[in-house]
Image 1: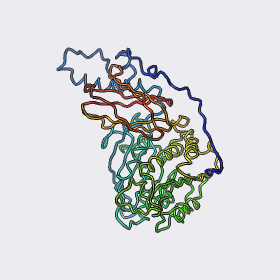
Image 2: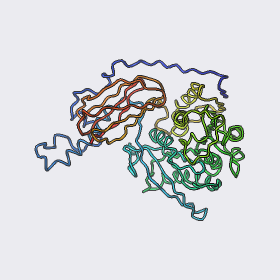
Image 3: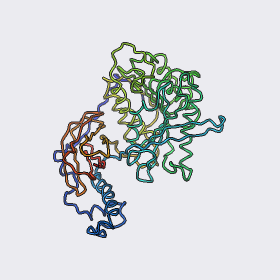
Image 4: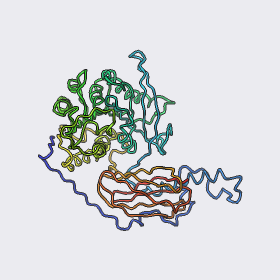
Amino acid sequence: MLYVAGYQQFNEQKNVNKIHHFDQLICPDKISIHQIFSRSTFINHSFDRINLNDKPKHTKMIKSKITSLVFAVGMCISTVANAQTWNTGSQVMTFTDASRGNRQIETQIFYPADVDGINVPLGSPIDKKFPVIVFGHDEEVDYTNYFSIWNKFTRYGFIVAFPTTEAGPNPNVEDFAKDLAFVATQFNLMRFTPGSFYFQRHNSKSCIMGHGVGGGAATIAMQYGNATTLVTLAATETTPSAISAATLVTKPSVVISGDEDCTAPAATNQSLMFNNIDSDCKTFVNMYDATHCHFAMNAPTCSEIMCNGSPNSFVHTVTLSSYLLVSFLRYYLKSNAPALARFEWKLQNKLDSWSYIMVCNVNPLARVGDDEEDMTTEESEMNFNLYPNPVKKGNALNMHMDSEISTVAAVYVSNMMGQVVYKNEVEVEEMESDLSIPIEHLRSGYYMVSVISEGGRISRPLVIQ
């Protein structure tokens, strides 16, 4: 199967019943506390065991019950949601490669969590397993400049690891490539190691991804481990040669270039790597008006040479690339069968943003495992984050919305009695939108924020301090 942009057109039509009465989808306002508690696996005692008149004795228990109520109401509100989304936890781990003189590989890791924070637990449920993306930075570019990568993918259930080695000028690309492969292998080992943070929480699948020099290193790294997929962003030819190493890549791959990138022009870098990749399924995407440093959010240390000098903003580039890649990775790393069709649809639906070549010679069903819990789950079309959360009363509450389609959505804020204290209907643009939610009239406490659209419902807890 060969897809070339402009050669074969593809249209996806969906029969969708539009929602006109959003109120009908909210959990009944009159639902009793006992009914809500009965749905929660977090409650071990019934609410009627708390004597509300004995405040000094039971203050801590009451607070515990209210906190648990947040999760219970969340279960009620999210009963029709398409897919679970997460917040972002972070930690630093150092891996030791004994085969290379006990080389220390410090790695910044971001992972799906129920709450934002450092070293917070992995996201629930406790038996959920997550794939890992190991990302190689460009020369002299810090992992913080790839915020768009980890922010996007942790929310969709991916662990994202950034080895911070070879951070200076003139990096040793061979060592960096081996670092990337080694970290991916360590995650696979940690899932079998009792006491490890990732014990039984990694699903064994991994992607080696990289930008610039890190993209070249990612290509070289594929020969050293057993990564599931390869993704490169404006990959640069390196020493040793990433172009030559591409001949050893046999796994599904996506190679992305920018047509305003004259630091590492596609014709002498990414195109040659793509041609050499020996995979049964590979895709080349040339993004219009994208520069080399756009993929690193215009990092000041990134070496930029533009071809014509009139590119789009870096926000446009990183938003588009993440929007595209999440479907590719959900298919290959999470065995989400519908996601591959979504990936192909995105490629052909955004021909004003890129040109592409897709070569796939394998039956799609043969590329899906049969052991993943979300193998046939439709890809979620809506996602959102609240920030800051918790938020102090009187401050602004912001909502960042990430949508696969342009749509109309209803935003609800409900208190812990199930009463709707705020609602608004908003137009959501395809990819990303931002809006503010007024909270001046709300008391301090626990709330649930829900977004309801054609694709279903997604909810997140909110704390106002």
